[in-house]
Image 1 (cartoon, rainbow, N blue to C red):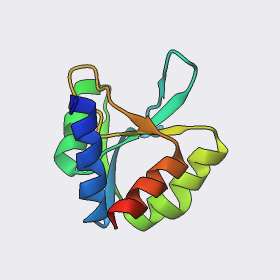
Image 2: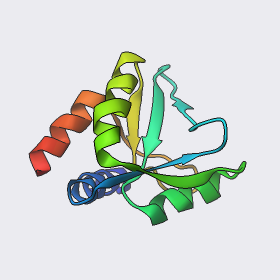
Image 3: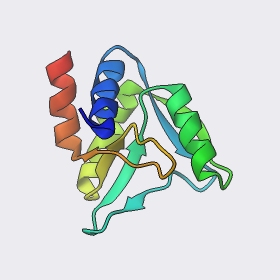
Image 4: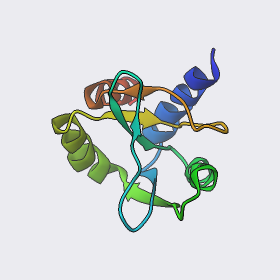
Length: 114
């Protein structure tokens, strides 16, 4: 399994057992990433250490914050779908890369691990 694949598996396993999701942000909000195909990703992490590592790699005053899982499922994912965003999950490494899924794919995968 690739590094991104193992991070994706860890994300869905961890989130299925948790009540929180993690993001990085500053006072202006959370960063997004524009891929080569023009798709914008909004990244999230399944644990505090993963999100803190991302905030450290990206710098620029970013900090890790938690969000209740219910809020993420009920508000963030539908908003992301409406805005045409995909969800980056457990990005890692020196360039913070990994897999992204549509909000519906995230919901489907979470339902499969529940």
